[in-house]
Length: 112
Image (cartoon, rainbow, N blue to C red; front, top):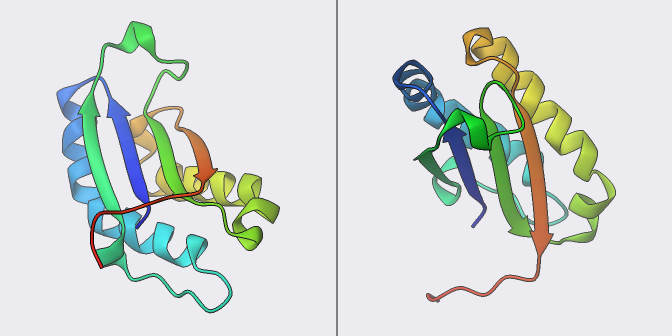
């Protein structure tokens, strides 16, 4: 299950991010699907985290995506980041300069 941490620094950004949660889940599910694994939006967790703007690199919103390091994802990791950024900047240009990081790792989980 991929996790998307979304860092924002204003109430306006929070409101926009809340409206985009479903579509962001859909976009991420599509981009992170690979091989025999087709993700559904319900399998993507989006967390909205308020932070102080001085702590951000971006002047807008920052996104961290955590997912399992499948070979197909590793090979297109920059493309995935760029497509998520492009989607968010088109869907909500008022978010400002969106930055996206993809962290791929071996993952464990606590359910069957």
